[in-house]
Every structure is written in C-alpha cells, then in structure tokens.
Image (cartoon, rainbow, N blue to C red; front, side):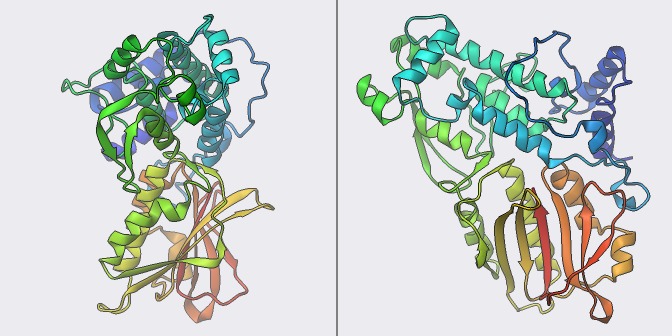
Length: 418
C-alpha cells in the first residue's frame, strides 16, 4: 500500500461508527506523524453535545451508505472507497445560505444585515472582533452539524475555508511547522478575516464594515479594508485590491453561477491549452451559462487539465490538433449537473471488456486524487464491432457496467456528474 492509499484508508476508517474515541485518537496520531497537511478536525469529532437546530438540515446519504467496495472490479484503485459528491455540494450550499457565514462570501450592503449581525453579537454597533468570533463559532457549528450525521467533509475544502475565516489550522496554530503563515486557494493568499492587517485596520476604523457593498460603503463613507498589494487571480487574471473583492473571490472558489460561469473559469486555462495545439470550444446546444453548482473549483480545474492531458496522449496523429468540445448543463430528471469533455477526433483504444476489467493507470490516478468526492465519472465511446456504450468508471454502483448508446458517438466523451 503506497502512502496516499494509506492516508485514504485511515481517513475512511475513522468514519466508521464502531471506531472508538481512543482508536480515532490513534488514527489522528498516525496521520499527524506521517502527513503534515491532513485535516485533524475530520478525525477528532467534538464531544460537545449540540442542541438540535430548528432549521432543516439538508439530508443526504451517510458515509456508510456512500461507501462501496471497489476491490472486485476496480483493482487499480486499491482501498479507495466511494464518496458521494452530494456531501460537498450540500455543505457548501448550507455555508452559502447560513445567516452569519453567507456574509463572508457576500457583501454587506443594507442596514438590516448589519442589525442582524449586531443582534447575534450582542452589540448596538458593528464590532469587528465580536463578528469574527461569531463567524468562527458558526463555522464550527455547521461542521459539527454535518459530521454528527457522519457526512464526509472534504479535508481540502474545509482547510481552505478555515484558513480564509481564521488564518489558522484546526488546532489554532497560525503557522505551519516551518514557521510560515497558512494560506488559502491556488493563489496562496495570507489575507483572511482574522489577519493582523485587518485587525489593525478595524482598530483604526471602529464600527466600519470591512466588506461593504456600494450602498453601505457610501453610507459609512468608507469602502472597507484594502490590501497593500493587489492579488491577481490565478484562475481568471482579475485584480483584487479591496476586501470586498476578496470576499467575492472566495465565493468564486466554490460557486459556479452566471457571473462566475464555467466559460469564465476555464478561459485562462484554455488559452494555455491553445498554445499546445488543443482547440477547445463550447457546445452551442448543451452549454448553459446560468447553471449553478457548489463544488471545489480548484479541484475541478485540476480534473479538467488532467483529462485534457489524457486526450493529448491518446491523439491519433502527432501533428493533428486535439479538438475538444465542452458541455455544461442541468438534468432535472436526474437532479444532477453534467460537465462533458468531448475529445472529438479520437478513438478509444481499449476493448469494452478490458475497460470494465481494469481502469487505466491515468484514470485511476485521476479518480483517487481528484474525482472521488467531487463528482462521478463516466466515459462514452465506440468500442469493437461498432458497439457504442457508456461505462461508469466511478460512481456508487458496486460494479462497472456498460450501457448501450443509441445515437452515433464521435470520438471519446468524458462525463462528470455532480
């Protein structure tokens, strides 16, 4: 068992109900010893008994219901167990809708919102310090609420959110073992809701909202906290200078929507692929810019880039460009969102039987490191004797099965189901 497999095994093992608290502490100790960046809070559940929240919690399958044995039909995946992408989606949606946490990813732009925050903080005027403490408590409450029902919470996404809100790891440390400040996103940003620069600004500007919208900015005659050095987004190249802009940038890390569309998210990446003779277009019929999806966008981009690399390695002629067509749409019947990466000028080189018998090395790595917990993965292609089929490379089914496709398939299509 390699190191990554061992880490996945320990994380999954910790989620089983029959594992005692002392056994969980032992698992956490092993992870702490061997894996510097693991999220200990996923393992060590708080013993605090939370009162039942009157608000309805989104219901989804528990971890035990989402784990399927993969050993019999996906041998190259070792002990990797299936994690439903709905876990991540529903947590992020709950975060986005929480009456306190939502204003860490939205601008504060009306008096009613400020009054509600003051009421939660027990103050008559806006108090930044008490607001930050309220945010920390609310985030912990939301995590505990999901973990209480054994939902698997993505360590990467939980760590990103926690560093953005607190600047700390889940033990309260402000620096890693090398003495470096914790950062978040692919931009490695060290500005957060609890950073020293923002605290100093709040001390100099008492009762001022750090992330105001236009209306509140004008009313308080202050546009909020601004950073000394602008940040240039690694995803879309936009310049971020104010804290209000940073709040929206944070939201863009997990929420695809009309003003943060997939086309916009992939534009910079696609320009780089164009330089490598990869021609990428969006389907006119099956690209919907209004689709909303809560997911880990950094990881989605990683998956996308790795599938493009697979396509490049499978192209038929050395000098021929790789032609890719992208689709992104909702399926109301299946209550799912689909992102399809269609390699138009390609032929699938494995037989139907060999595909079902064993997942390829590149696809196995993709599933273990990025796909699992983010989305399900299917492939559509024309196999031997002209047979056209869709295969579930990774989903909640215990076996890989082929489903015949009636319409003509051109090339090879990778289908990501959220």
